[in-house]
Image (cartoon, rainbow, N blue to C red):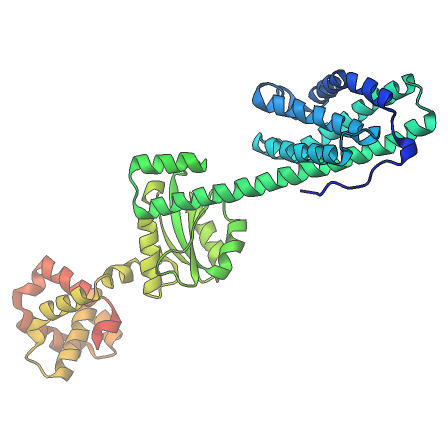
Length: 393
């Protein structure tokens, strides 16, 4: 908050005690007129003077007027303390206005109208009391300088309240994101949503982004995006939960994330966001950058490497008695036979061998596997086990 100035009016500009007392007697009607003009001329203050907040605003107006009179009266009422008290009141008024949702533009408009109205009353009263024109003119500068100090204090209070509220809400949003990732119950999620004042979208999509990209992305993504900080296993990366990035909106999201080193989970109903995060985290662990929907085969195949190795050993058991070189060639041919659905010419082209060679090898496979090559369950198991070239070693 701005420190109150220790500047006081020159002695020849001070009001006499009698004049100050006379002006004080009229301060309640001045304050009422100030409030009435503000309500009439600033739409944001229509209806603002009912309830506790209205009482706070009235008090702030009275304190501001009293503080000015004390400052220029030269009385024993500690003018610097009166000034400090009025500035503190203005600061707290600014905080209250921020909590009420009114902007600094509305607040400053109220100050401009209030200062004009107050000066009309104070100057008229000073003239009626016989204060000379030179002193009245000098008081004009003091009045508007005083209003500038008060408005600056209120703006500072407004800014501080917004920053404090923003930090508090950000903590609540982070707690909501953590509740989603922890699989909180439906009542717990409902409470977290309410506390964070967050409107649930239809879906959430997890995006794991390098830490250097988190802040820039938050500026570009929808305002309802949640940030989940300090997730285990995400050293050097952050997690964002993006609302309603499904359907055609997913393409826009992926375009935005291109070349940013991100891993993107699937869109899931917002309460199931942890599923999207689990997918993105798995893709990151496997080095599958970008859209996880484009890596589903690899994600499925590599979800349990040990199980895949056991499956390969099980379904390829008929080849165990062959020399390694022969087993490798037949395994390669079996894979091509499955992928090309038995089409000899396509298999030969894929293996760079003559079709007769393919015929010979397939005959060997039929002798080794027998009727199992006609069994749908065995064919599916072989397809899963042999679906990637990297497993042919």
